[in-house]
Amino acid sequence: MTYQKSLRDSLRSPEFFITDFAKFDRPSTLHAGFQALSEFQLQHKRLPRPRNQEDASVLVDLAKKIDPEINDKIVTELSYEAAGDLAPVVAVIGGFVAQEVLKACSAKFHPMLQHLYFDSIESLPSALPSEQDCQPIGSRYDAQIAVFGKTFQEKISNHRQFLVGSGAIGCEMLKNWSMIGLASGPTGIIHVTDLDTIEKSNLNRQFLFRAKDLGRFKAEVAAAAVAEMNPDLNGHILAKQEPVGPDTESEIFFHLPSTDSDRILDIYDDAFFAQIDGITNALDNVKARKFPIMLQR
Image (cartoon, rainbow, N blue to C red; front, side):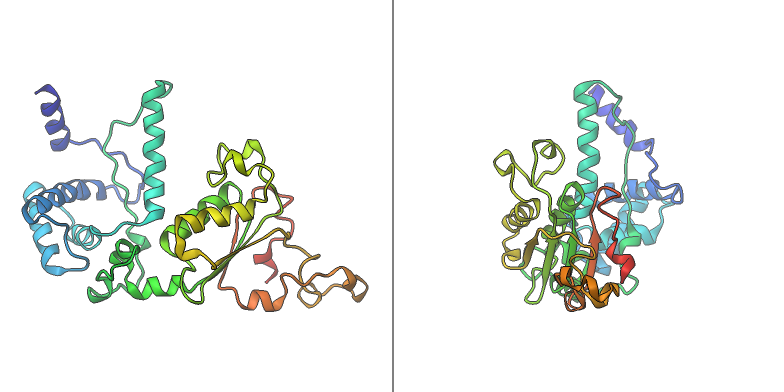
């Protein structure tokens, strides 16, 4: 009874954990919105349909019974996205929750007691998808389609990306890309290069690697790991071990003297970059970034 009373009091008079000081009014609206979302589920045995105005109106009315001062537009967007699920956002919230659990278990730091509402409405495109575009198609990406639409999903599935570095940063990038289906379409491809091999010290933070992988090339192991997570990437992710720099880029690209042409390998030449839609720098030290390719283009 004491716990239930404490929970009710907390819901009625919450203390919010502010993550964006430009949105002081947002947590109170979301606090009412999420309670309304629970009530919607109890009444309808489902979540609001993606981009459905009828369900959104019902959710707004439920939220206003809890807090008449809510921002209607924000609760409407909450209804539109309620059926969605985005892997990168899950990673952010999961990391935060894990941190708080460790605090509570270790008693080394005090865990957070406030209500946290994570809001990234700015991530939505300026040209919002239609309700029809957000309907499920029976794929593993339906929860993402519910937010961004089928047109967006098709575009990223045929994206061609070049990742430089597959250590701690690169592992996180590859994991998120595999979960969202990046480059999983007919013309999609991910090139990942890293000349390093896996060491024991890497295992505590480069989560795609295991003890059995010690001594193997990072790029090869990381590529195989994310393809196992999402079989749609099989044949769409290529691992390399060559660094990006003057020794592996074309003579025309760097305008090197002709006397140096005998050491040019032309791995990352103009033809290679002409077929790439995006480049991600996941290198973790200044020396490795000596020739940042994005600045050379």
